[in-house]
Length: 125
Image (tube, rainbow, N blue to C red):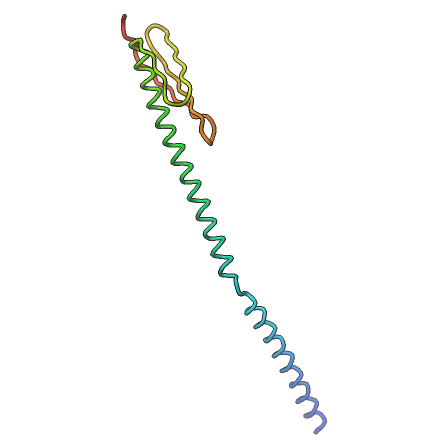
């Protein structure tokens, strides 16, 4: 019986030692995560920067579209009264069928060409 108790106590001691070794190893693994917050912060900042740049690009595209619409309207009105019109940037195409004048403006953008057109009644001459 004494031998059995001794065996159990040695066995329990070995189990406790293994458990402590495993816990110590786990503690080392957790404590080796130094700098993880820095990496997570860097990824967070970069993702916010990407989202901000995409939103800014969208605003620029909307602004360019509004400018193209405005230039098309101005070009159509100028062509309707027989005046030349040249926008600051982009290309203007005028189509005059006698009754209606259609101006098409094409702007270059980072996202491709932005096209707008406007149609007005031609003024009698």
